[in-house]
Image 1: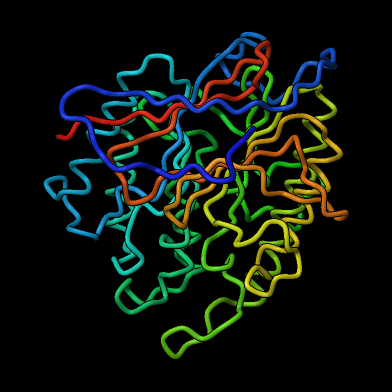
Image 2: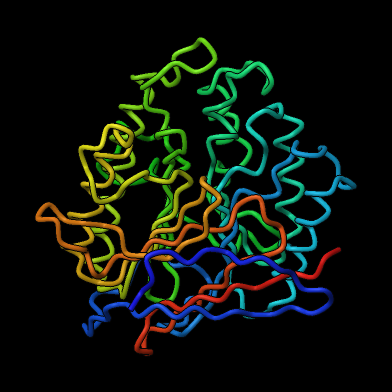
Length: 358
């Protein structure tokens, strides 16, 4: 049985790491491999077991100061060191919100984050968060144009076509700007995918705050831009559909989808509070059910750690090959290690690693 929610527990570790293991059994489908995947990365050695790390909503630059001596960044660098010390980690996925929503969205802050990213020894995959662009119109964040800040993020973090980190070049990815039939969406290079040892990983620009859907006024200003939302929403759905088709055609064993925003209610498509996610949830339910192989969603945003199976199909039945993991938030003392083993009874298993205080 998979618990409905698994919340983080209080308590820390004084001097040694403690690892808590959470096992999740996923449906495994035995199917022979089809044609070799053309979107390979160095390090693909067939379908060998591997591990990767997941973090998000940290270090939250601006909560207590922007420099390396501030408490959140100093603690985060200890977390980075903990991940670096684990030689089994193939790469790390950061699920966005590296800064506070009330801290400037300046180029200097973005460059500070890039400097931090380069502290990772293995490749680091950065997923943009709402604090980095959709919330940048706030005066405390600098009063920027969100679309202009998103373009700056593309220039600094995504144009190179590979991951960040000291060995980021080892993880090249295939972005939407290069995908066949995606001419309308070539600007969305922050949507990308890569294949690693029999799994397809997909990153999408899906945001917190209801995915920037223009649904209410905030601080006297109507949040979100309908044109921005509509085009990005269509781009994400188009790339997600294309990625599922690619994974199926290549006979891959499973998929991992990563984005920042937290859909408020997966199982209620018409719930008004989730309008910014409705199309995406419909797409996920349809494509995951058709794919029939294990699919793992990673997201952050609400700072509530959980592993569950919340996705329902149009008939109201649970999509059993879909699992959602939301990472810890505002917590530099823990990271999640995900082990992938195509030959085990569970494709994915999860460990919570606690980090010694700096």
